Amino acid sequence: MLFCIISGILKILFAPVAIVGYITAYIAVQQYKLAKQKVKLELYERRYQIYEICNDFLLSVIQMHGAGQDRTLKFNLDTKRIPFLFNEDVCNYIQQIRNHAKELNGLIVDLEMNYKNPPYNNNERVDKLHRQQAIMSWFVDELNTLEKHFQPYLNLTKL
Image (cartoon, rainbow, N blue to C red; front, top):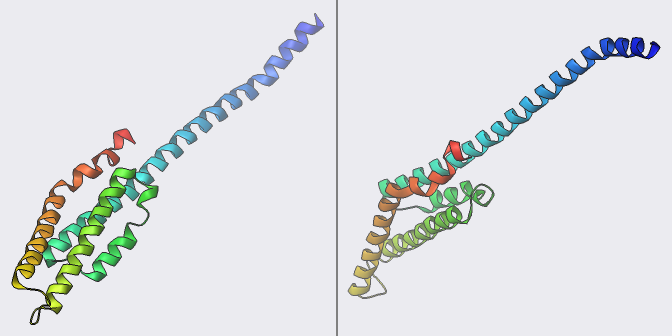
């Protein structure tokens, strides 16, 4: 009988403790879910920032008819953190953009510096101009397809 009385008293005393425990556990689970969503949102924002940097760089190359040393350096610095945000496919793609910008800058400098007295014959100059035009066309094409490279990483439902 004494056991039943003590058991009843303990149930009455510990019922609020159990309720508080359940509420605390529920709040902890909700905070975990919220933190997980926050991390996904921050990842999305950083990835989207890289997408915008690439888009702006491609657009500037097309508008200015060249990459320019300063813009290329800024692009390289702004995209140096890509290995931490993307898989190898986007890293390789951005490296392609860098390589094309570097080659385009070299061609432009070479053609401008040697405009009056080129150290090569006219056919070589024409080949360099054609290569410059091909690279510019590549930048135009990439501006139109940039989104497909980033799409898998910017889909909020798949983060």
